[in-house]
Image 1: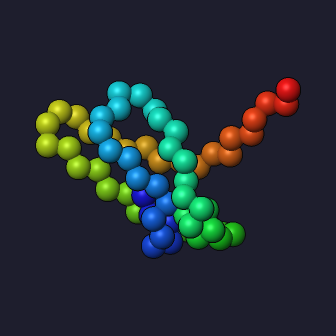
Image 2: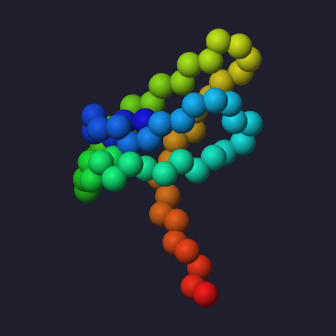
Length: 63
């Protein structure tokens, strides 16, 4: 996945459910207030395929 032309994350292999993938520091720095451009590519030669992209902030629970 690219954000504003900067590599923000990459995954390979197969998943049958949602997975969280850490954003690169460069990708996070590329985010700007207002509109941003996201580019994602999925390539699979057999079976179904889909892409669902979102950005979340994960906050650890206090101990």
